[in-house]
Length: 132
Image 1 (tube, rainbow, N blue to C red):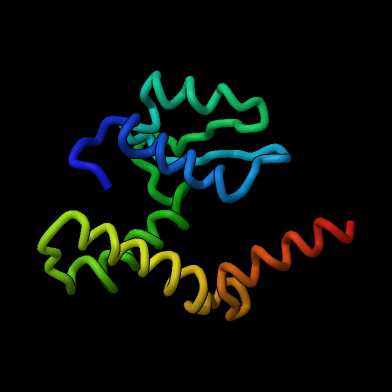
Image 2 (cartoon, one colour; image 1 turned 120 degrees about the vertical axis):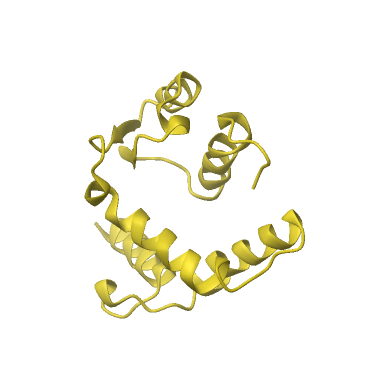
């Protein structure tokens, strides 16, 4: 979380954190809306620097193309943001991190995933990939 929306303080560090946890070893599509950060020259160049990653963006005004992300952020806002009065940025960072990493990814059952957690689905993916 940053006081700025500049790509070097927001999505590039988030991308690096993600890649630090999960190495890219196969073709990957990074899909987003047409937000100013994702469409910026800096972010497009950053994504292009990895030959395994292709950037994809929704058509203008089409939230349905990115419905998974839209659904996640709606859930985050309803279940955490609207009910909490964060006193500091650090408190907000900690609460959002715990909500995503502990609750949403590891405990929350998702009906569209057969009532499994996101971590269970990821484990199954890597087990299947290693068998194949």
